[in-house]
Amino acid sequence: MTRRRAQQPGTVLIVTIWVVLVLAGLALVFARSMRVAAAVSANHLASLQAECIADGALQYIIAKIVDAKENEGTDTDDGDAYEAQQVGKGYFWVLQSNLESDREFTFGLTDEAAKINLNSASLEMLQKLPGMTAELAASIIDWRDEDTDVTTGGAESEYYLLRSEGYQCKNLPLETVDEILLIKGASEELLYGEDTNLNGYLDDHENDGDESEPADNHNGRLDAGFYDYVTVYSTEKNVDADGNTRINITDASAASELQSLLEGKFKQERAIEIMQRSGISSNASFENILDFYYRSQMTAEEFAQIADRLTTSSETTLSGLVNVNTAPKEVLLCLPGLEESDAESLVSYRQANRNSLDSIAWVTGVLTQEKAVGIGSYITVRSCQYSADIVCLSGNGRAYKRYRAVLDTQGTTPRVMYGRSLTHFGWPLQPEIVAALRKGQPLDSVVLSMH
Image 1 (cartoon, one colour):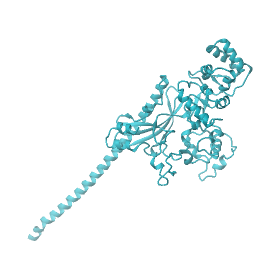
Image 2 (cartoon, helix red, strand yellow):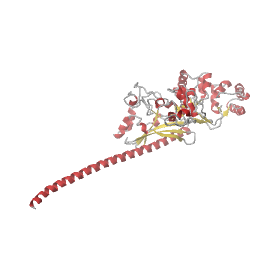
Image 3 (cartoon, helix red, strand yellow):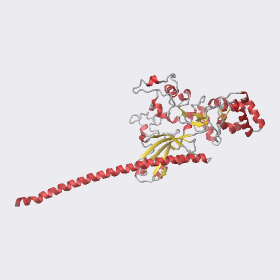
Image 4 (cartoon, helix red, strand yellow):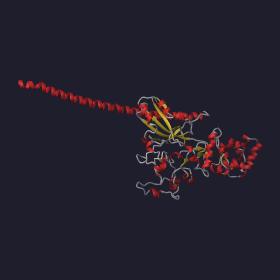
């Protein structure tokens, strides 16, 4: 009995130590679980915040567009208005591909009318796109047209049904640009080039050869595909700036309406002279309104006053017209008959005469008559659809979201006609921005230092 009592205190001590160790272990595990749960909750909260910022950014963009429509002179292409805009504690950017420099970010809305429309461009126009192949151009024609005739180099259902997961040739217009990847001859390399995250910037992983995806030539230049030069969204109503139905100068019954328009702008004698020279009273046909301009022998100043009131189409909606005021040189070169010197001249003129671009009449002062008439059926000075690449970051830098939205501005309130998440492409801007917010540093100084 005495020996058992002597051993009891030692046993109790050992048991106590083990109990303390177990409790300590449980406490550590519980504490770790709590830390993980707290981190998960914080990340989830940051993700929700980024989502809310995206909603706010979209409303901000819509308000900007409405303001530009209601207040003449207000511009939608002010890059500063779309860079590092604060919403609550977070920020958003509207990223724009910089077609002039792959080492500098630009911000703002992207004009969809400044691109070639895949659903309306001719075979020849498609073939002129940077990096386009003859096979893919022909296959796009077959994909979108209603017939089952195979364009040379193209494909109809017979080709697509033989694929591992066969499907029919659509024979309808493309609904998104990325749909092109379903078409014979298409590839991500052709469409996106090295710019696989679609930010228009030469990132390190896009300039390291074979070290990481994507495969690139390590030449210090972003060799992008033709993604930034094409669209499926560009349309406009066949009305003038005030919403009035245009006068179809190919319709002989509209001659009296045209004469009334001319008499309202010029003297009666001059109106009669223009009518006689144009030949519209004798059922003359015109290729487009620039053809009418040359044949009527109007001055450029006279024609500019009435150009927006005229049309040669009976369609209520015009699809795929290229905005000659905003299209880059690469898109202008796709227009029929234009050479590089013509495209450069158009770009130079519009940069020097920003306040004289109200109608397509201005191209007649830059191009020869043959070339101006040749592109007259394909151009406009109006843009009705804009895309926005919205990048959102939570205030603590824990979460980001990225969305692409296409907005149609033709109604009273702009509407979103297409939306897609681009978050899976990764953070598209400078990593220093995220690092600064995670450290609690003010973002203004970081952004300013990058300009």
